[in-house]
Amino acid sequence: MATEADHHGAQDLVISGWAVSSPYGLGREAFGEGLRARRRAVAAVDGDRWPVPYEEAGLIPGFDIKSVLGRKGTRSMDRATGIAVTTVGALLEDYGQELAAHPESTGLVLGTSGSVQSIMDFTKDALTGDKPYLVDPARFPNTVMNCPTGQSAIRHTLKGPNVTVSGGAATALLALNYASRLLRGQHATALLAGAAEEFSVQRARLEQVADHGGAEAPPLGEGAALFLLESGQAAHDSGRTVLATVLGCRFRAFRSVDRASAGLRTCVDDVLRTAGADPGDVALVAPGTPPGVLGKEETSALDSVGGTRLAVRPLLGDATAASAALQLAAVLAARADDPSLAGRLALVTAVDRDGTVGAALLRLG
Image 1: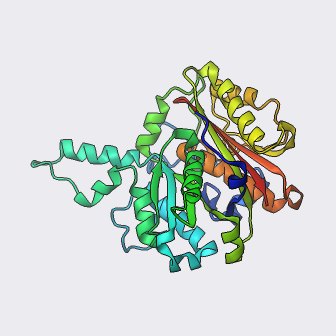
Image 2: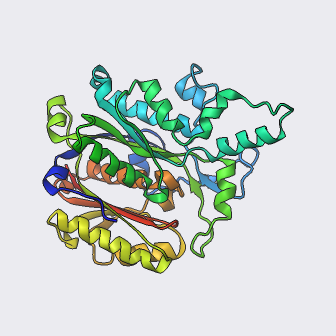
Image 3: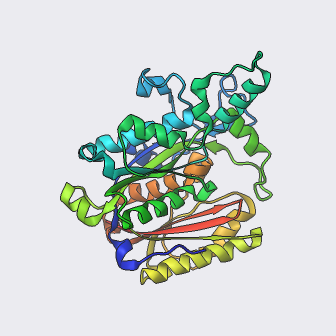
């Protein structure tokens, strides 16, 4: 199910800003420093605070919603929403303050799985609370998947398209593709696109019993990365530097694990062909590196593709919905460190255990 892309139209869609919250800390500087050192940010979990079936996890260090965002409007905010709101705010502060002058034309496409913790806690309260099954109504919005997207837009006055996307490990690439379509359709002039994921007790318990392709469940991570997507002309007019041009995204589905490699290879071949490029032209590859058999399938699909590999998951943990967003952030961080990558191609791939593969191709600015 390859998505429609037009080569000359895709070339004009650029990334002109980005922000990240990761187990390395808040912000691009901490993220870049951690990657340069190839420092493993997965660390021992405080069992008293997090009674989870994992000894390690990749947590945003010291992240506290009220400390970062203040007390106003955060009483009932869950961790997933807090991470998303924080990262959206950082992107707007650094790159898009003038976007506030045109809030109706600035939107948000956020990939997220929602908050499993909020959903399960609210359900438990509804079943176990004193009759008439009293629950805290202020926490009900946290149980819907689009809560982080809606709260981010409200807090930062984004009145353009507001979209929530969910697709497992491919979530951020799906969000990037959706945002590209909105821009080509002239539904907005600028879009923030990316993904966010939280670490929680309930998510950890569910992941512990999930099928990880015959491998042991990897340590979980959390974080978010958001990217400012607009036309090259809009970036030029606003004085923003083109960090990367989005050349295209492709997605396919697979029924059985042994077909994942063929599906991803088709995605990669198609997006390269549409861009008029060969596998050897790729300078950077940021693979999803899923555990077990899926990881082997991804490696097989990328055998013919050149370029340096930027493996993020082993350093930060499995960030699920935010995985591909952190991979794309790693590509931009690598470009910032290496001027020789200007004009070169970068490929971001994702393989999700529920049957989706995806690939995004970019030309670095």
